[in-house]
Image (cartoon, rainbow, N blue to C red; front, side):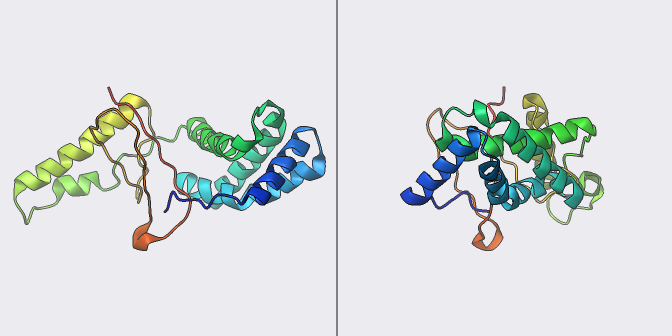
Length: 186
């Protein structure tokens, strides 16, 4: 999935900001329009995290309600989308906490351990150690473990301090919505 998002044209951006300002003032049609505008994107954002259709629908509904209730707290309407999608990520995390879902870090780790190696055993050991390092780092910073059967990617990198840009694309250079979480691992 690509992290690239085509920025709104100035006219479209101005229209969206005007809609947000009206919604903040309590204009019910403007609030409804915002919900309709973002329902599909919120569902697309939540689906990789929660996977079940009913739960995705619940997530979208929860975020929509929170958005309407908290819209007056949004200081800068230009920051509406990051604010909304942060709320969606937090709602997904709340869901996992509520159901006490503790997915395993690697779906097939027992298969990996019991898999007879056709290559050198150092490679298998190195792979298992890398999986364990990622799991320990995720646990240390409070990140979610990868659910069983996950096709998500996890990287554990040591980089020098500075500004970086993440360029993300899906298999076959496809586009979509991506969630990138960056942690400072102790």
